[in-house]
Amino acid sequence: MALVEINFDGIVGPSHNYAGLSLGNLASTRNAGHVSQPRAAALQGLDKMRANLALGLAQGLFVPHPRPHHAWLGALGTSYADADPGLAANAMSASAMWAANAATVSPAPDTRDGKCHLTVANLKTMPHRSHEWPATLAQLRLAFADAVHFAVHDPVPPAFGDEGAANHMRLAPGHGEPGVEVFVYGVTGGPFPARQHVEASRAIARLHGLDPERTLFAPQSEDAIAAGAFHNDVVAVANGPVLFAHEQAFAERDALVAACQRLVPGFEFVEVPAADVPLPDAISSYLFNAQLVTPPDGQTTLVVPEEARETASVWGWLQRHLAGNGAIRRVEVVDVRQSMANGGGPACLRLRVVADPATVDPRFIADPAKLDQLAEVVARCWPEEFHNDDLQAPALIADIERARTALLEALDLTELA
Ligand code: SUG
Image 1 (cartoon, rainbow, N blue to C red):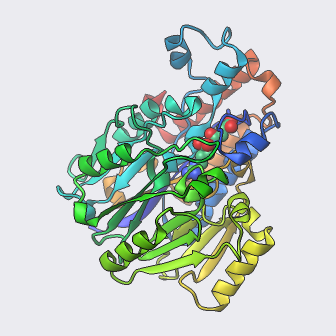
Image 2 (image 1 turned 60 degrees about the vertical axis):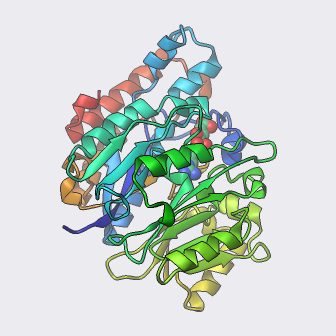
């Protein structure tokens, strides 16, 4: 069986909007109240998936959640029509698009029972994300229903915040070989909340049956969180034996690097000094929220957002690295501006699962023809614009609900309705 890395992207939902809900996520706060473009956002996401397929990578997808989330408002004793605008915005968010926060994934070569383990994230820190997990879990249970190869877990108890793969890195000589899993957690972040709790990470490592000798827990630097790195994947990304990180990403960087050197054959640390790329540039450009991938030609490739090309310090560093024959051999640029304006770059939009694609429910696997079909549904059904003043307008809600239904029908996933 061929284990490959499959990137499952969250399709941007028809309710994509800028409500400024995520304290500590500077883009979300900056763009609060701006008019969003759900249709353009979803098409940008589909184009990114197309570009990854063109690189020869395996691509999967997750579907948007039902919005507004009527059941959540019902549990709060209200309804979408009656809720105050703050609660309504929390029930309308399309934030499930950021699939990096869907779950933590430990591939089969790392686990005691030889299955790929997935734990859905509780996302309890932010109200608009705290109600995502049941709809995410329903999709994980369908996509990875093959119990011979997968074990899907409920969220860890909400006493401890868990934000999924955005704070989890895996280092291995190759995707199909045993790896070292690194759980990055936050302690404090100046004025901002730390969203990943170490107790959640430790629970997941136990539940997944990871080898304690090959599992690392690394504190995120307080400076990084305070500067806007609300998840570790805003300042670091790993792929194969390569760890690509900003100098200020980790509180205990030397200990982490030493452990990786000891445990990962061929480990390569590519560190970007603050003197070359100051933390604010790294965060606004999302240099590290890139997809670091190994296409079939073996050339380690970094898929960055347009904003990285537009940031002089970042683009200069990348050009020097490429010219110097560094670990990253190729840089691809994608336009995900609509998602970026809410703090979600190329890496936020995807969940990596190392598996044999033949063991995954094929409805969650993408190919060019399926992406064309989805683009047609999006072009026909997704609202062109979302104005926050219209948040509770019945016509907009009807459009959003109809659009999702059309997508589920196109994918033959109506059991998720
Ligand atoms: O949780 N933004 C998301 C962005 C998540 C990015 N994910 C990773 N880094 N992996 C968040 O902060 C903004 C929603 C709003 O403001 O309307 C939001 O939820």
